[in-house]
Image 1 (cartoon, rainbow, N blue to C red):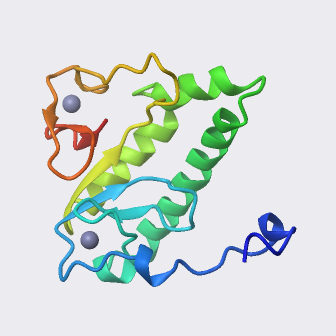
Image 2: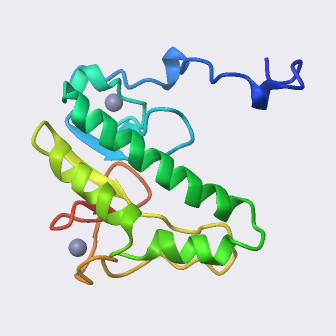
Length: 161
Ligand SMILES: [Zn+2]
Ligand SMILES: [Zn+2]
């Protein structure tokens, strides 16, 4: 569809295809991670998108997630654009006390009342000189390997990096 419609970037987002949805019988570990779709909730086991009704949180939390998504999308867009604002956006995305990360981690804390939830920390893996972090970006404590993705995790801060 994308190849035949030159205006696809200006069209409303199509629904997520079924094969990109989480098909685990139960969601045991959730990740808040903006992957440029409407819903930033993903299953850490299969990396499929998790429909919010499967978690069952209230409208207030849904609003907060949408606000966070907008904030993250704006900064991530500036970073992706690689222009004048890239470095500025990167610093915002990496700042543990910056609004996007404070709000994101608050949401993760609230989602954690339903199921174990982690916050996907921004990282720039595009350059040849990328070195995986050795300390948690929030508490500076040691990281442990995550069995489900090529990332490390801090269990204390519920952060994946
Ligand atoms: Zn899943
Ligand atoms: Zn930590």
